[in-house]
Amino acid sequence: MDNALPLEAELEHQWLFNGSLNESFTNQFVQPPWQVALWAVAYALIVVVSVVGNVVVMWIILAHKRMRTVTNYFLVNLAFAEASMSAFNTVVNFTYAIHNEWYYGLLYCKFHNFFPIAAVFASIYSMTAIALDR
Image 1 (cartoon, rainbow, N blue to C red):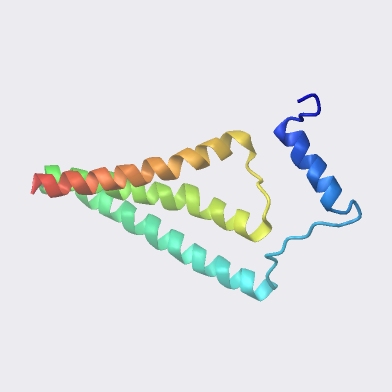
Image 2: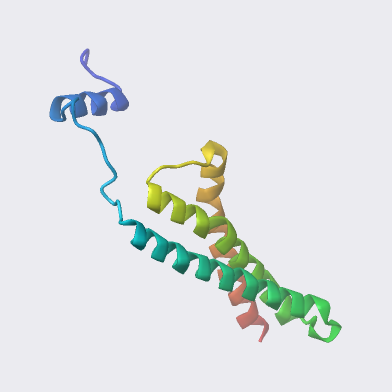
């Protein structure tokens, strides 16, 4: 076991052995500009419809006193989880998918991995609570 290397060093050694140092790595998922623009429009529409729609739901329920029921508070929770998921996750996923590079730093990387899971659990538990309340 004297020749045992840590995993990272072993993987780097395997890459140097199997790959060529003269290779240049390019993004294999590069798309033509018209396709990137089309994807950008599609993502923008999804984000705008999702955020605006969910904010309108929250505003209607919170602005009108007769709408403040237990079930509607669960709907506010669900709308908040969905709107924040769209706002904080979809745009970041789009930029990462297009450029194949992470621009947002380590702190947001950790948040980005935690937040979608928390939002999905909030959505699931809100729908479960609505079902149990009925």
